[in-house]
Amino acid sequence: MFDELLRGGMAARIVKVDPFDLVVFGGTGDLAYRKLYPALFHRERSGQFTEPTRIIGVSRRHLDRDAFRASVKDALVRFAAADEASSADLERFLARLDYVAADAAGDSGWSDLRETLGGDDRIRAFYLATGPDLFCPIAKRLGAEGLATERSRIIVEKPIGRDGATADAINTDIGSVFPERAIFRIDHYLGKESVQNLMALRFANALLEPIWNSAHIDHVQITVAETLGVEGRGAYYDESGAIRDMVQNHMMQLLCLTAMEPPNSMDADSLRDEKLKVLKALQPIDGSNAASLTVRGQYRAGFADGGPVPGYLHDVGRHESMTETFVAMRISVANWRWAGVPFYLRTGKRLPQRFSEIVVGFKRVPHVIFDMPSDSIPANRLVIRVQPDEGVKLWMMVKEPGPGGMRLQHLPLDMSFAKAFGMASADAYERLLMDAIRGNAALFMRRDEVEAAWRFIDPVREAWAAMREPPRPYAAGTWGPNASVALIERDGRTWNEDEHDGE
Image (cartoon, rainbow, N blue to C red; front, side, top):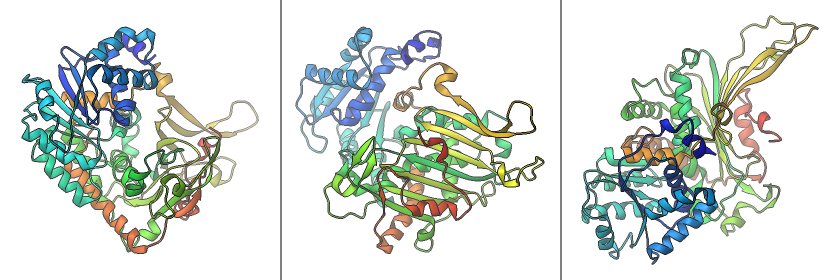
């Protein structure tokens, strides 16, 4: 439906990109099949590519071109709803595909890749859909083989390192081959429509920005809740945990976009300068206050996704683990705009609902003129739903229709993007891939952003290690450890869960 609508009344909005070669390292991996090829196929259906554009998969598996195309076709049928109705688009897309078997950490296959790319001066984008341990070897080899041309970009997935030191090493090695303007550190959350709409809401409406400060806002909540467990990622996840997997990147970026000052333009560096200021303004959490400002949890057996599920230790095949699957934090931004306004962050696996949202809780009205208790009028709140069902709700008090006095109800002004625009939102990877091809880095992280985020996160991790306390257990299908409820309720606030109950 998305592409049909684009081809109809919205076709004029499609801006074609110059011809390019996209080389996907990890080209037969889960990320490539589930996200990258479907996103590229949707851009194909929308008519965004120009000739001659190619997509080249690279991995150690020995496949010929036809076998690779068949595997991608299977993935598109499964993950992109490719069917007979899109057969012409599908065949055109498959014809763009090529494949090279190469060892990212060794010598084999690199001459084949160099021959496949040839000497054309078109845009080259190297997407590293691999583990972070291969980022540096691949980048260095691209430089040594002369494949990193003036018009090349490199796209790297999170996580960038395991801590500040390893992130610095990765950034230095990649930066020795590619200039900063050609390095695209991808965080797919920044490609989501509702995240970008946060900037539109704040900076394109005179209604909100004047009250976007501590004089009117009581607190902010950012939640990224997942119903799934580690789902086959146990080996990676047990070395990572929720703070590396979600907080250091996704949630820090959402916090920055919520709290940043207005940039002077939508230029990439103007945006990233303002996000960096937020990261630098975060009050430290370390051994002196981590116990009171953070909560770690680990899911146990319980009920989720409609049935019983095992606990984390079963999922990773271990008898014990200090890895957290849940994190809640109370963060303060030490500047004039946000002084005294707490930011509550919460993320976890095996929670009751899957959603990501930003909740801006405003202060209560200062005086109640109606014949009701003063605490019976809830505060307004703005709920920005990142996923699923992307949209915005502004909860307000309104009069209930009919005679019989002034009866008030708390109801939302509800804008669903799908309903408002008559179309589903494009997948985040669709926008981000095309932005990288164009060289537009506005929605990608700059090196100093990554390093500033680690400077905040590293002391938290070190404090947890020094406390030597295991993560607090919580049953799968619940909202995490009870301590996370206490974290916010001791401030007289509650997590925004009421509108998710029964979904």
